[in-house]
Image 1: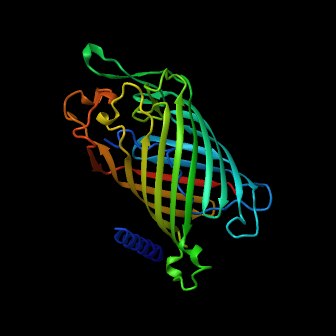
Image 2: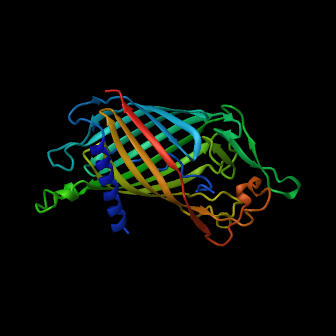
Length: 348
């Protein structure tokens, strides 16, 4: 127990050094969970040379931003692709992953294809088809309408259980590596810096809801704030971390951003702050508890939130978000985000 405590203490001290060296009202609509895929710090890689069926896995994701947890199941099928003797292309694979996602508010089917053309890059394509229902004031699907009753903007829910489908298609590029990759060209590389890793991901997605009559209609998804709309979005992140050969197998800093790219007719995007990038900064710990069980604990210690006028007025929370206006142009304020736990178990 004393040895474990000492290891954890040293890991936190190391993370503090990295921090020192490198220098969404909760995002009104929190960063979508599909915006960026977190890197996998531990676990088996697809085998090269032959078609391979990887171990099926089940994952659980829960956080303080929402009372709902999400359970997902996926199965990887790996194919060797454009492999050669050169180290940068020796282990190229195409990994196909069908899956299922379920939460207390939604049910969905997922499909993904991830190609590794180089040892330091992934190109992925993914798609989701989902529907849902409501539990109390939390809505898994449905429209977020504006009543305009009596000349006053009032948001109200318009939907029904399994009332239509939500779908996404996306393409993403991830670049990654660690200092150990420099070993072949730098014999003097200190062993202590080899486990330092960096990863950058960029994802462009198009989302839609079958019951939205036009792109100017907002809709709910998985219990969020209902600020989604048909159209394109971008999500990106940057990781800087350190791998450890112990129970606490990685520590990392993560910076992420998300923005809707389309401008529906009739929306004053600048006035409501919809054209602003929504930033988040997190501290991430990765754990390898068992041979097949990994945990990730992400604490978003800072995020940017839009600052609106009259936010303290009675009834302000019922005003449809399209009619909210920023206090000043580009007005944002820093705030604490959330804590999220992700667990992944591989069956063999």
